[in-house]
Length: 205
Image 1 (spheres, rainbow, N blue to C red):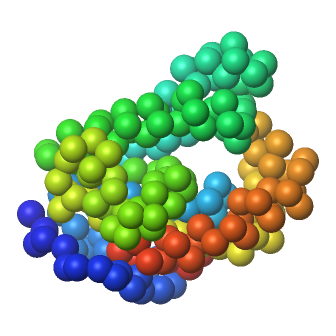
Image 2 (image 1 turned 60 degrees about the vertical axis):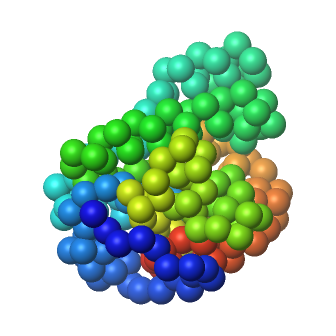
């Protein structure tokens, strides 16, 4: 069991990604490691690396309840890949994250777990309350924060756009079609800066 966290403010260390991920993995033998960041920032690459090095269980939001998300969003908006609308944020997002976190924490009692998900709303919520992301996540499901450590994967907007275009995922189509708005309204709204104040590590990709 890891020791209790120190009081805030957190100052997240920035390192070259693979080197820092290896260091984090070497110090982790159980519990839950949250790998978060903007879509296409490289968090899935980071999560897979940690999973391999740690021998951990990987829980990926994109595949956690895909059929349910697509079915509900088809009914509500006609777009099964909608992940950016206010409807998705209100109806689907909170419940998917609660289930994701609970599943990760239950599994984390027995084996190391790596969770791959954006957690953008959780980052903003933690910053607003002046607590760590781990504490905020724990409070959302009434679980002890000491079970959780958090990593923000940082990338430049141009890198994110290039990765989105390269992977060609349907969920990115709306972002790419309205890239200037997405960049201004999402990527450049200060979430990355907030993350650096509430996570345990910032890893530059």
